[in-house]
Image (cartoon, rainbow, N blue to C red):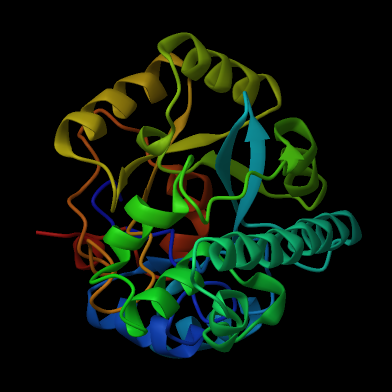
Length: 295
C-alpha cells in the first residue's frame, strides 16, 4: 500500500484550476492515479462531481479542500481530507474565507491599475468560473494573455509577490480555527507544500508544533513544488513530529503545472503514508495488492 499512486492535491474550475472536476478525474485516471482528492481553495462545490467521476472510473476518493490560514504573518495552506462536506461549521468557515478573497481581488485590481494596468480585476474575473474565488492565478492568466508578461512565473515575480505592485496582504483564518472546522466535520489535516513558506527555522518549528498541538495529522512530503532534498527533509520532519506523509501534484492546468496528475515520485521509504488511515476502504476496493502499486 505504500506505493499506491495517490494524488491528494489538485484544483478545478471551482477555484483556480482550468479543468472541471470531471476532466480532472479523467486526467488523474489516465495518469495512473488510484486514490484521488480534489482540493479546491476554500471551496467544496466540486466535491460531488469529483466523487461521482472518480467512482465511475474505479478510483478511490476522499473529500478534500485547501484552506488559507495566517501564521507568523505568512499565508499557509492547510489541506483537509475525508470530512463531511456538508458540516455547518466547515461550510460557514469556508464561506467567510471566500468573502475575504473577493475583497482582496478587488484591491489587487486597484493596485495594478495604479501600476498602469487598468481593468485587471474585471479581466481576472473573466477567467474565474467561480466569481467568489478570483485568485492570483486568474490575474496571472489575464496578464499573460494580454501581453503584460510572457509567463505566469514572470507575472508572480514582477507583480504578485510581496513588495510588487499587485501584491495585497491579507489576514486569513487562524491555524487552530481552520483546523477546528475540519476536525468538527470528522476530517484530518495536512500542511501543504511546507517548503514554499519563507519561514526562519524557528518559525517553521513553531508552525509544526502548533499544527501538531491542534491535532494535525500529516505533512505534504512529495508534491509538485518540492525538490528532492526538500522531500527528504520533510519526510524526516514528519517522523520527528509523528506526522503522516501526503503526496499531491498541486495540479492546476495543462502547461502550467510542474507535475502531471499521478506523475510524482513515490514517498520516501521511511515515510508513513496518510492513506494508511483509509486502509480498510482501499482494501475493499482491491487497492492493497500489487495492482495498486507503482513500478
